[in-house]
Amino acid sequence: MKPVIPQDEFLQRRKRVLEQLPDNVVALVAANQELTRSNDTEYPFRQNSYFHYLTGFNEPDAVLVLSTVSDHAGSTLYCQDKDPDAEVWHGLRLGYHNAPNALGIEQAFDIEEIDERLPETLNGAESVYLILGEDEELEHQVHQAMAYLRETEKRGNKVPHRIDDLRPLVDRMRQIKSAHELQVMQEAARISSDAFKRIMKFVQPGAYEYQLGAELHHEFAMNGALYPAYGMICGGGANACVLHYTDNRDQLHDGDLVLVDAGAEYQGYAADITRTFPVNGKFSNEQKLLYELVLKAQLAAFEKIKPGSDLNQATQAAARVINDGLTELEILTGDADENFEQQRWKKYFIHGLSHWLGLDVHDVGRYKDADNQPVKLEPGMVITVEPGIYISRESGADERWRGIGIRIEDDLVITEDGFQNMTASVPKTVEEIEAWMQKL
Image (cartoon, rainbow, N blue to C red; front, top):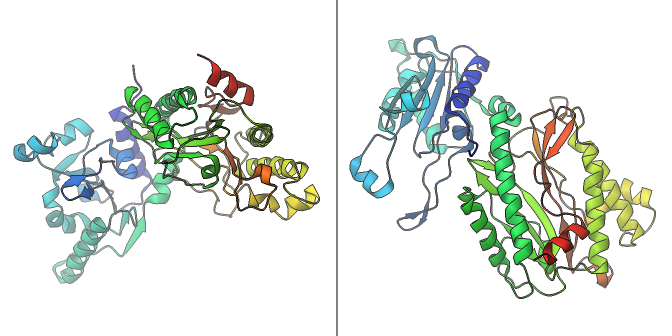
């Protein structure tokens, strides 16, 4: 049976938010709206991650209200009403009459009523909590409601005196994954891992970057992941040195490496894998030396991944390996210790080592605590580890290294005694990759 998040978990999340909110406040979270792609066609709908996290409801044009004001404490949903004419064109709607029973919401109303009802909802609240910057329309509606309350204070209405950001509270919750979330993320990782193994078999000189994408996305869809978690990066040769290369249009050539960064989205949760492998199935000597250096850096970072450690320690471990290796290969000149101290390795290891992973591929969560110290890793956190080396054609390095870009990325769950690598099944050593690509 495929893993899913049970409806009761969304209910428990809302209860946790209400328990952590101050007394006498109202929090509002908006669903996404459909976005026009061209004329009267829309992009595939993707729910707002905060709204999804708190409701599991996958329709556009809705607003969740969480209130600790005594007169109407609890959860309320505003959503689209049933409309047979619209549903003929765009599919069935839940409808606000069905929402309480289906979603475990105390009450629900037609989204068309929110402007009329919002002043009453906010009246008497000390403050309003929003996911600030996420939904301009909702923020405008809140300001309009507050303006009305301000104008009618002589009638006994009381306007909230401030607007706060709900992010810190919910972000902390999202950062620690539940058992059900981890099961869903493991499935996203499994689907993505199988897709990578598929394209390693598919690739050959003369294929195009976008064709690897087609193979990936086919594997995603055939296993229940309807969409990728983000726009695929598929860079052959020197294109791999462009960190967010998404054109994916060029032909793949004999003797080049191809870097693929992609992941499936399953039940709203993202996987994020990068592998770099030879188009013809065999690493050259230079490619092998740099590849094994990146892999060594990743393994050094893995040694630091455990509860109580932090991502800065892992980054320093990976950077030291890359720095010393580049110095040994004379891509960096001079003394290794001085190169590390002066951070000269950053010329070739350009990006950060890691990021949080969850409903968003670059998931929410702070990297520094209130004392500006790195956040400590805890069981239930999910991270990526992705060292890389990128030697562009304009780098000034010796000609034999130019045009080589390599990144290796895996998805790790922090456990009680270390971590679990959810994407370990994708071939990763030189020997594993070459053997897999040559296997019939």
